[in-house]
Image (cartoon, rainbow, N blue to C red; front, side, top):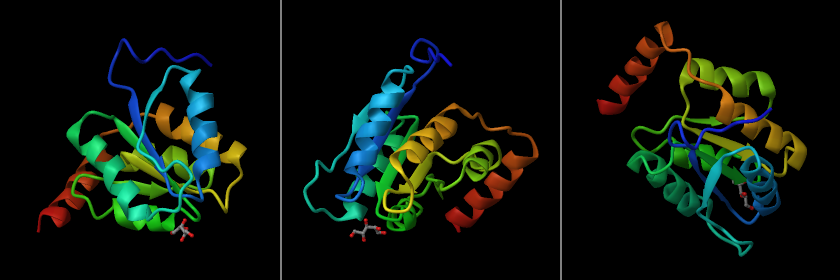
Length: 155
Ligand code: RB5
């Protein structure tokens, strides 16, 4: 499959990991750069670090509009997803299988995906990232549900 998104819209992707996720992050950047995506690597570079710091850096890029979506990787993906979902306007999904990854884009319009480097192989992680980045939100009745989530967020 060939993607040529750069001319059409913002396909800049913010990506970050803690020390557990560097190998998977590098594999995703390598594989998906070849398919037309551009990445802003928000760290870490292998040194031990605290995942909420990286989650903040990636979410801020998405919320500012500089990046269209974000990818976060830690050991399980759970810490990253808890941290990312604290940011107003971020809908982060912990992704571990292709069906959920596809449907979280179609139905939840999630703008950040989180993955566990210690629970998924690099090959699976790369494939899920491609699904996440290439599946468009369906809109319609699903937008109403997202609006209801936003209402909760604003309470
Ligand atoms: C780091 O050892 C580990 O706690 C982290 O990568 C992540 O799994 C947290 O949810």
